[in-house]
Image (cartoon, rainbow, N blue to C red; front, side, top):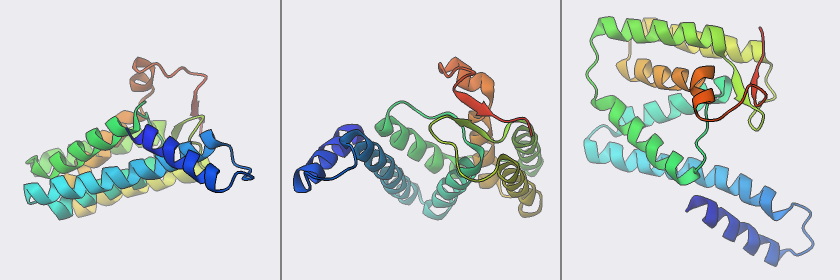
Length: 184
């Protein structure tokens, strides 16, 4: 659905500017990315509001986005499915009761995963930031949760950490060639 919408918008933009230099597929890709972000945010806000956990749902959303920017990870094939599943995850995380000891354990597991595997980008999503800096940022953000002790952050970090594991990417058909895991 989001893919079709982004393609339609790209075609309309091209019709408004037939001499434009950006190919329609490139415009559609960028529009899809932006629509996906907005759809996931809107759905997260709606579900968070409906569940009475708007603030924590949004904290989970923005924490995930920040961690993903610097750690990479598996991408879903469908933008629509990504927006819906992401919103469900971000709105469910605040509903989960996590014992303080488990917050510590989840944070420790996440920190170890980020320390070993971050960043792990597919060839389509490599940022301009250096891999060493990406690793430092993700590990530092995780380490901060040892002080904050937030169950929402611990679960969000863990969900994103699982998505950077090479085994998860291989089960979804991403090959070693497509994974840009740098030895840091």
